[in-house]
Image 1 (tube, protein in one colour):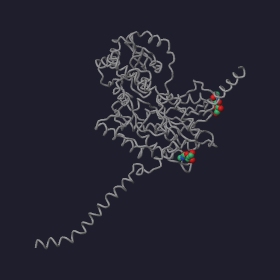
Image 2 (cartoon, helix red, strand yellow):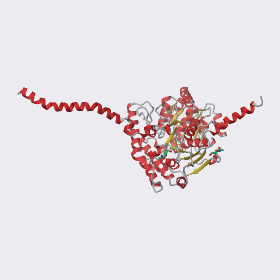
Image 3 (spheres, protein in one colour):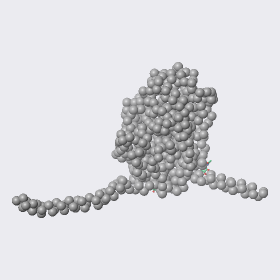
Image 4 (cartoon, helix red, strand yellow):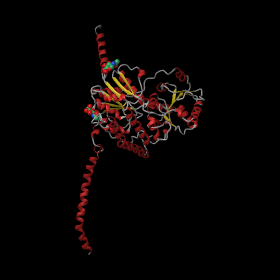
Length: 530
Ligand SMILES: *[C@@H]1O[C@H](CO)[C@@H](O)[C@H](O)[C@H]1NC(C)=O
Ligand SMILES: *[C@@H]1O[C@H](CO)[C@@H](O)[C@H](O)[C@H]1NC(C)=O
């Protein structure tokens, strides 16, 4: 017996060691310029996990993780936060984010581009970033570039300079424009534009509107956005580097895109082999709540409602009458209400309502007494609601939020109201319906089971593919050959042209031949008439 135990232990140890070493110990450069707080829920989660799994990560970021003491393998390069909203406020009449509800899609795409271009340009003015551009002996320093897939494409220049493969993180999940980066055909007939409030089943009018949005975006990207990103690179680096690649050339070297999406929040559609759906990876197991909140929810005999409009939109920007109306409705409920409200001193607060500037959303939604989530339907909050199976009352504001709530109402786990026009009666009846009709909870539980049921948990999937790309030095075998075709080849226009030629040429020949024969016949008929 005795010799067997150490042997077993030794084997176990070897296996454990091997597991620790798979992929570990790589050096990852991670420039993230766009200061969107919610985006960093996903980014931070990935960075933390990479460090935890033994990688060395250099994180260029506008938001610090220093407090988390990630250890010596984590290097933080803090850059100033670009004022994204300040950069676009002049472009619309909106005074706060709440006023953006009825902006049309094209305007909103423009805003996103302007924010992206501004924050890219700004990042290249920071000495912290320039240090990486100007560093000596760049080749061999890093193994992978990890960047955000969100209108900061200029950052990909670092992949070129350090000669390393690239993975991008699409914090917004799937977008129609991604298919031209990955060389696949996107059926616009049922893949709605991501910022239109449509599902995969559209009426004719909705399809026209969605195709219009996708076309305009494609045109804006080609004729305005890409040239503008190229110009930013030219402006900052053309003196330094003789041959500066274009953004398109840089994008050609993206090995994989981690998509912040998963079934059933993402309807089935063609994705390429190197688009990896990892939606929900930011969701950690719930931690205990602060005592006051824990007691508040524990003692909610009739359940509780959680109300938050996310990190960009502020409830405190609602006009006072609207806030009073909300409080009036909440005060009449048996349920308790937790409201993420950015001003601690809210007068006339009913006894069953608690407000706070910041709330640990993940842990609140995990509490079994939380029955309804009043949400702006951002992607992260929607994923958390689905993960924890909490029905949603949606008040979408902009971008993908309209689409997110439409998925929820179509699947029967959510209701939608317009916060600009909602009345006391409408709010009251929507909440009562969600609280008392079990259909919403049942549908949400079903969605939750689908969202959680995966071959590998979301975070492990992301880690696997990151290791994989490092291991295979860029995994070029995962990149579609569609990217190397000219547009007329990609859409088979050359073959359609040849086919048309084969069909039309004989017909044309026939017509010509007929014309040729006609004059010879004419005199005959003439002579008959005569
Ligand atoms: C830090 O990174 C190196 C590789 O760069 C790795 O060998 C080491 O195990 C990591 N340390 C920790 C504590 O993870
Ligand atoms: C793309 O990757 C290849 C192989 O690593 C590299 O030689 C090439 O320079 C890269 N292209 C750009 C534009 O960075």
